[in-house]
Amino acid sequence: MERAEEAQPAAERRAPSTAPSARVSIWESVRACGVWGKELDKAELWRQVVMPRYLRRAVAAAVKAKDEAAGVAVAAAAAEDRAGEDADGPAVAPVVVFVNSRSGGRHGPELKVRLHELITEEQVFDLSVVKPSDFVHHGLSCLERLADQGDNRAKAVREKMRIVVAGGDGTVGWVLGCLSDLYKMKREPVPPTGIIPLGTGNDLARSFGWGGSFPFGWRSAVKRYLSKASRSPICRLDSWQTVIQMPEGEIEELPYALKKVEPGDRLEVSQENGTELSEKASFYKGVFYNYLSIGMDAQVAYGFHHLRDEKPYLAQGPVANKLIYAGYSCTQGWFCTPCTASPQLRGLKNILRLSIKKANCSEWEQVKMPSSVRSLVVLNLYNYGSGRHPWGDLRPEYLEKKGFVEAHSDDGLLEIFGLKEGWHASFVMAELIKAKHIAQAAAIKFEMRGGEWNRAYVQMDGEPWKQPLLQEHSTIVEINKVPYHSLMINGE
Image (cartoon, rainbow, N blue to C red; front, side, top):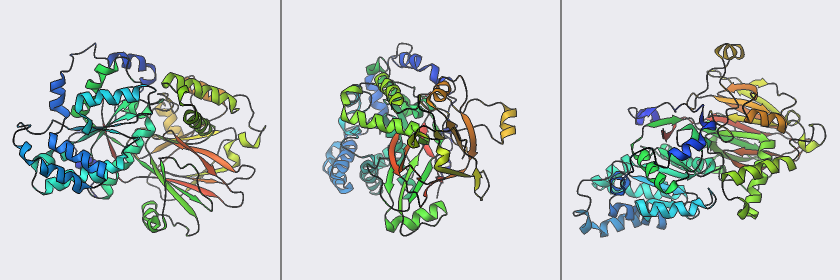
């Protein structure tokens, strides 16, 4: 299989440094308004990012019908239009935008309307209506089929295409996961992805230079986002596959981040992870790009998501969301209840055993869990929790003492740290102290057993769920690196 770094070696570079991002989100919002720069002409933007009319209509038709043949038929019917339009050829880099209209409070729907004005409706997909997998399997297939029939414009559009996701970290991860199917189907190149930050944390956006919040003067800023997406260089991002093995039972309210492994797919998953899958157990798999966490922070996120679904009028933007998060943290006892006061709030050591594989090692090594840790976080990026840096900038002598290396988003390693009670987490998030460093690993395995607990809370890239636990049998969560990189657009 051709690796991502081999597909576009000239354009790729390491992810930009993001150390100051937690402190400059307001400045980024102001700067993105376009006050300090030449206003981008709409006609020039059109030439940069818009597909020829017959192709964008063909792609939209294929996605709507979930059939590439429908798109090919639309393109064939528009044969008379091809000679006259876009005589100079396709755009510099055609951009397709996926919008999560539920993100960003009131901005999601307004942003979609603005994008329709700038790059036409056919190149903008609302994720409440269209799944990104439909675009990958039908829209891109339509372009590939037209290219195979000798349409050079379709070939150029397919090869140059770029994606922009307007949403939070969970939305970006959902789209990246669908794009990764192109590697498995050997349908490269895989379009790189840029971000318009509409979520609460926006840590993926921060890590690749797209800012930590939706800008104040967003109507003007949208043009700059699209222009940067078409012209900026490409970075690499590690992807991590999580496989959950449950002795019995099912996960209710399955998040987008997870899919159940059907019996016919178990051999493929077993070969990917190098482990045997029991015939009687239930299995789920998913991919994360930023973090996976177990414990109190996931419980708070789970409660927040349910509250937002029940009372959407409360979640009117990132600031309101963060206030709700803080209030919900207090009601769950993270701040005020000691670990021994309630079986539901005790340290994770009581239910979890942690094992890791270090770089270039094939054997599992058990790691001691600190007794005070209530939340265990596995981190791929430098940013976590709205641009905070809990792993910290570690001195060379400390790295050497602990056997760690400097962390990067494409180094094939994950950082594991712990958070204690809410006060400790608050000081970590304020960057007054560092999190509890536990390990750095190339693969991770959690074994969880219920005892007095009948569930744990887990989240991947902001998508939380309740994980059922049994007292007699272990639930196993195994994390391994995906053998190819995701491609991100550097927004700096």
